[in-house]
Image 1 (tube, rainbow, N blue to C red):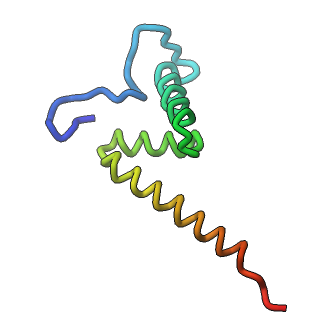
Image 2: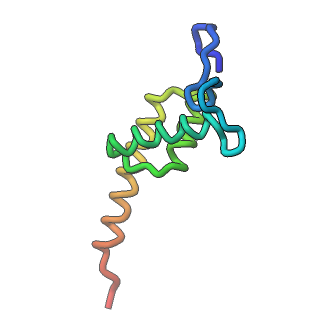
Length: 93
């Protein structure tokens, strides 16, 4: 990943490490995602592991994390509004 500053930055989720690398089960990449997902869980984001993985991947591709946070927040609000309207809507008798 090359940030806007032009300096090369290694991705947290895909960083190479000499310590306890195990290529059979994803190695450091899997361990990195475990840590990121645990942080997400501690912060009560309500995001599942797959969603967190997708968001991390988008960040690694250069998408602004602030924009992603905004989109996720508003999608959650839209979902909540939609479900509340769906539940409160009474079908005609």
